[in-house]
Amino acid sequence: MKTTATAMALALTAALPAMADKAAVLETYADIAQAGYEDSLSKAQDLQAAVAALIADPSEATLTAARTAWLEARVPYQQTEVFRFGNAIVDDWEGKVNAWPLDEGLIDYVDASYGGATDENAYAALNVVANPTFTLSGEEVDATEITPALLEETLQEADAVESNVATGYHAVEFLLWGQDLNGTDHGAGERPWTDYAADEACTGGNCDRRGQYLKAATDLLVSDLEYMAAQWAEGGEARATVTGDEDAGIVAMLTGMGSLSYGEQAGERMKLGVMLNDPEEEHDCFSDNTHNSHFYDGMGIRNVYFGEYVRIDGSVVSGESLSSLVAAADADVDAALRADINQTMVELGQIKAAAEAGFSYDQMLARGNAGGEALIMAAVDALVQQTSGIERAVTALGLDRIGFEGSDSLDDPDAVFQ
Image (cartoon, rainbow, N blue to C red; front, side):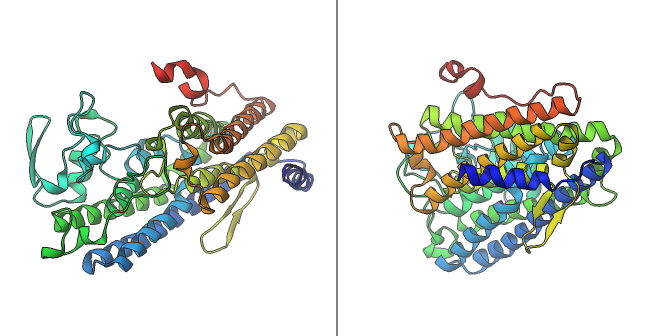
């Protein structure tokens, strides 16, 4: 597989134009961002419809359909994470839609093993679903009606605690799956559909309020994605910013690739979980979808460098690429980076294939599971190698050194256990 990936990268490189136009490269980048956020919005609207159906007619079938819609919504969204780090508009917004990990007891009931309030988070077990009024930071809060405004303006990062995540994909994920109480054994959350049932069939209590919260969180996700899709459309601020200064725009592209590749994905999302053997470090921990989140994060990096994105309808957005720009400066650096990126996708694909065959990501994290650790660390090593290739591309383009996001798990492993 390694030989095939390398050969593919070299063959594609040979077909690239000799020269590249920075402005055209940035237009492709903005076009891919626009398409990715539009696809994310479309899939979030599908999720919104599935959630409405679940609330209107709770059943095993409608809960399963809502879960499926959530899983499908993650595919395009994860491919947009490469637009973080280098684009301030995305960074200022992203925490509302994809923040993790979260103290789920803020939102709804949890198992007794979860515990309660901690020194770090006084609201870790607030349980908004069960409490129409509560005190937050010394203020009495009327939560009789759970609305998007309540989630966004009052609860999100309440008391300046980052783990008080009240909005976004992972809040919705928890409300659909519930806690995953399987530890490092196989299995996802098992929230029953009756948690949304009416009257005496209701389990978990407060089924009507749970439905209110799920609807509010999903509606807010849709509106947030509408905003970001507009930022990358013609006339949008994000598009104008990244295309308005060519050198700064190229730096933004490389910053997003390198920071996601190294500190965020290889470090915080992957190696840290291996070091701690902790399934709570899974990115999609309630649904056991982490293998897909990792895969599509990697694909997002590939999309940006290769200048190509496959939309959810099967159409392709493509144009002059960052790869062509690097190839014009140093063909060897480009060929090596294309091979590195392809190899990363091979390793992430191995994790995805293993999980889909029944070896779930939380099992891979178990202490003493050498096979799982080998799968994850092969991908970590590939991401680190890929980041070195991105750094060489920065040098080839004559740009100043870029400070990519780091991670203690990679840069100072001893600090993880202090």
